[in-house]
Every structure is written in structure tokens, then in C-alpha cells.
Length: 457
Ligand code: ADP
Ligand code: ASP
Ligand code: MG
Image (cartoon, rainbow, N blue to C red):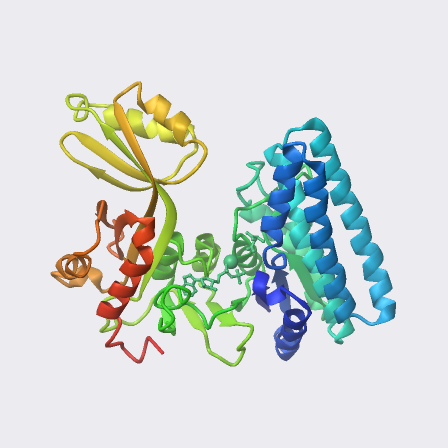
């Protein structure tokens, strides 16, 4: 069997959904399980309505809710014939009543908890999976809705709950395998799950890729296909650099590094459950299904090109901790890292000097509290609106002088921090967010002009 995951843009409207029905049909013999994201921008919309309700602005929350509702009804109407539409209409109606009821409850209490927020956001994937299942059925596919919350069991860290791999595997055997064995095509919402007690959770933004990988790993899929709106993974974000090239083949490690440092095209954790089982992952374009996309495999052949890709991760804050005498004192670093740990804040890059430690973190609401705690130990400065630029490639470690070439290309740009990753697969540095497009275009022009045709298109 195979897993096919369709992202937000691949289910954004009736045309997109009609297109993916055709793509799934062409793979029917391979017994697919389908994972779908919420329709594009719906998750953001749900978060906005939850926030409005949390602030007591029920009118705004309801207005936003009505927009999402219209979009789903219109899409369903365009996709379905009358009989099925009546059925789906009733189903969607019930969902929207629950959602509106929930928003009114949040507004009445005037507080949005992470748990309620997860519940609100989960509607995105629930709604899209209802519409997609019906559309598939109407197009002759033996589709059947599979509630992700029955199989994706997680812990209770709302917003970024951790999937429990063993339990998920067990649930898949019970709830998905028999359907597939009976020739059905299960359609499951990505991104959402539930705790053992049945409380709805979400597994982090962009998490539908993760859901697909969990399903693929749990069911020992032959392949996981991540369908998106570009021809696979590119040498850099095509929105910044339209002449980015398609990467035909990339190793799991390189892809993970890229995804971690901001190549939104694939969720980093996707790679993990798949690596462990050696399941190939393909990134494909639902608007151009005949393109071969990118194949992510355990190991790749050596390539003569220095780098595979450049990624940028915006919304980074640098926190600089300055402490003249204490810095090198035994136990100081441990105390610093303990503070970040207590605030559940992950650090990306660290650099130290005689008198200071600089770390980068994703910009987040905990920064003032972290700073306050750090100030008990040392003098602290932070600067927001930074970005990490990351160059990835397996050949970096063997080539001398790489850093010199990179920084020569970057000489017009103010580089704040530098790190050559411990994995030796990446070289990263921190710059102002506003310098990202220029930095990427310059690096791309310099390092991606003579490409190995075995690896790049
Ligand atoms: P989906 O909704 O299918 O999950 P995403 O928006 O999460 O899609 O990811 C696809 C987008 O990722 C592309 O439209 C592209 O702009 C962006 N992207 C960033 N870096 C890369 C890259 N290196 N290769 C391909 N796409 C990239
Ligand atoms: N809908 C979720 C999000 O926008 C998950 C996903 O699309 O992967 O983050
Ligand atoms: Mg995505």
C-alpha cells in the first residue's frame, strides 16, 4: 500500500479536489491511504477566529467562521451531485454548528486555552476530509472517511502534541488496515490527533506531512507521496528565486536539515518515521502530476555539486548573554540552557566567545520571560526580525575553503552569527530578515549555476 498526502493548496477549491481525485484514481491498484490538510489558509482562519473569540469579540469570530463555511459549502456544491450534496450539506452544517457553539463558549469565558484552540483548529482537517471523501465517492472511488483522532494518538502537549508511534501503529492495524484490505480508500485528516482520553490535539503547524509519515510507517507503506504545489524540493524557495532547480534525489539527512531550516515544502519530522523504516518519500506536484518530483532516499550517490539547497528560516530572535567573569565559570552554560528548557524553548544555533553566548530561537511569546530569568545570571540583549540562512549538502565536509567562498559571496550583507552544523551537512548563518531575498539570490547565482544533471533538473 502507499500513502498519498495532499497539502492545503492541493485541496484549496473544487478544481484542486477534482484534480486529486484523478491522481488517486490512477494509483488505485497500489491501495492508497489518503491524508489531507485543511483547505489552504483555513487553519490560519480558524486560529484567527479562536483568537477573536478569546478576546471576547464574538462578532468577528462568527464573521470569520461564516467565510470558512461559505467556502466549504461552495466547494462541496461544485463537486457533488444533488443527492450526495444534501447528505454532505447536513454533515457540514452539524460541524459548523459545533464550531460556532464552541466559539461562543470561548467568547463567553473570555479565555482561549491551548486545549480549546486545538479543538477549534481541528475543524479544518475534519471539514476538508469530509468534502474530499464525498468528492472521491462521487468520482467512483471507494473512499471512506477515517477520523484521524481514532488513530493518531498523542500526548497532551496541545499545539505540538507528540505522536505515540507504537499506539498509532496498533490503531492503524485496527482501523485502517481492514479498510484497505477490503479495497477501500481511507481518507484521513492530517495534523490532528487525540490523547488516549479522546481529547483532540494537533501535532504542530505543517503537521499533515508528519501524519502521512506516521501512517506510512505504521502500515509499512511501500512509498509515501507528499503532494504539494511545486515540482518537488527545489534548490531554494521558488517564491524568492523563480529560477530554483528541482532536486531529483536527496538524502533523508539533507532533506531533514533543509526542512528544519525553513524549507516549508516538507515537515522535518516527516522524515523520521520514514527513515527508520527505509520508506521512500516522494514530493510531487498536484498541478503537474506527471513531473517526477523529488525522491527522498536513505542515502544518495556523491554529487559533484557542492550544495543541494539553500533554505531560510525567518522569525528568529538572537539572544545574547553577556557575563564577563561568570561565563566560563563551571555550571554557567548548564544554568543558561536550563532556563530555555524550563520555558520549553528550542535553541537552533549557539555561538560563544570569551564574554558572551549568543543563541537563536524562533521568535515566540516566551522571550520576555526567558530574558527576565536570564537577567538573574547576566546582562541580556535580544534582537528580533532575524533569519537563519542554511546551505545544505553532503559534500560540504570534504571540500576545503567552502566557508571562504560563502562569505565572500555574502560580503555585502551583515552576518550576525555563523555555525557549521554538527552534522557537517549544513552551514548556517544569521542575517537580518530584510536581507533574506538578496542573500538567497546571491548565493543561488553563485553556487547553483553548474549543476550535476544526475541530481538536478
Ligand atoms: P502544502 O500546503 O502542500 O503542505 P506548503 O505551503 O507547506 O505546501 O509547502 C510548499 C511551499 O514550500 C512551496 O509553495 C514553496 O513556496 C515553499 N518552499 C520553500 N522552500 C522550498 C524548497 N526548497 N523547495 C520547494 N518549495 C519550497
Ligand atoms: N493545516 C495545517 C497547517 O496549516 C497542517 C498542514 O497543512 O500540514 O499547519
Ligand atoms: Mg506543508
